[in-house]
Amino acid sequence: MDDFSPIPDYDTHGWFLKSVVEILFKNVVFATNRDKVVLWKHPKELLEVFDFSLQQTGVTQDKLLTLIKNTIKFSVKTGHPYFINQLFSGLDPYGLVGQWITDALNASIYTYEVAPVFTLMETCVIREMCSMIGPEWKDGMFCPGGSNGNGIALNLARFQLNKNVKKTGMSQFPRLVLFTSEEAHYSILKFSSFIGIGEDNVILVQTDEVGRMNPTHLEECIQEQIDCGASPFVVVATSGTTVRGAFDPLYQISAICKKYKLWFHVDAAWGGGLIFSQRHRTKLNGIETANSIIINPHKLLAAPQQCSILFVKDENILYECHSKGAEYLFQKDKYYDQSYDPGDKYLQCGRKCDVFKFWLMWKAKGSSGFAKHVDAIMDVAEYFERQVLIRPEFQLVSKRQYINVCFWYLPRYLQKKKDVMDYSIQLHKVAAQIKAVMVKHGSIMLGYQPLKEFPNFFRFVSQNSALGVKDVDFILDHIAEIGNAIYD
Ligand SMILES: Cc1ncc(COP(=O)(O)O)c(C=O)c1O
Image (cartoon, rainbow, N blue to C red; front, side, top):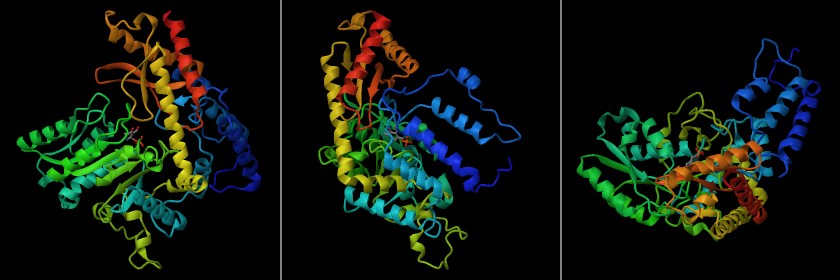
């Protein structure tokens, strides 16, 4: 088939595109609880049953439809209510439409010229969210994920310390050190290494019994580093830690940052969506005292991936730190006011339009819709925690702070028997064994991990406000049922 141009032709592609939408409607968008979360295959088996090969000549549209069906068949249905494996889930209909439209328009948001609606929309969403954080907040940028946003914030903190870094690099700097909690997201370490600070210069501050940064220890660490001749430059607090959902004490950390003149960044990638909830936003109290904040609407607010925004108080810093003024994009003699081009405050050149899906969801539901969504999820997490507390075969790892409910399933021989030899080693194996059975059944995908001195435990997190108490009962009953079958 002579079908190589990137232009849809109704006669050639109309039927094909409609068929794909039908397949999506049936197998993804309107899939139900009764469908499997995943049809698990070992990688070697998948390599055999799926045609990954590429040839000199193209295949027919019928063959493509079969491949599309197989892609869906063997993919994880992250919109399924029992996909509770990660900090994203659900399939928001308005978010999905937003994503489809931006993909069809294939905009790149650097200039007003190329993306008139989306550049203005971005400014509008950033301003609206800034006003929700506090009157001093002035600017922001969409990021390709929270990790990346954390990295950009670290770079801004270093730039603020000495703006020459943009031109002369690190040669004039003493040894820079930064501080974050031992339960902070790993992206802080990764990006410290990436921007040339080095992982060894990330000081991990102790956390308390529920996972919050200990501010007394933070100050001790800062003082210790100063005494050793290093230069502290930024503290990263977390609002909603990845595993335990803990909220660091922002006011106390902020006071320490002020005292030592440090940049204060808050990683609210996971917890930041609480800003919409009147009932729960107090968990973010103190966030307004930061210099920068990352919030991921693709996590708590269930916007499709990716949707992540870095906010800054200083309205000039993004341009000052990142701009390069490429003349083929940001011409000085444009036929409109160049201040409408946001592209130069970004590190990327071409950039996907992540704002539209979020804006469309916000428009469809209103701020009150996001609030109801958040409140419903928090209610379900509270019910989950209560069930864990009253069922003898489950044990809470630590008190719930947020949506994350961290718990162990205890086989009967380990219940109330901490004196069993190798108790921790035996308990460590349980979550992995139960998870393997669940995934092979395709019934539930639920995350687990060890943390500090704790052996492997399950972490329940759902961003899907359609989940209810019956689902919680099913999840816990199902784990207990598999546990009974394995260990009794
Ligand atoms: C607290 C926290 N920060 C940052 C990130 C990274 O976000 P992303 O996955 O968008 O890179 C995560 C991811 O789970 C997170 O939990």
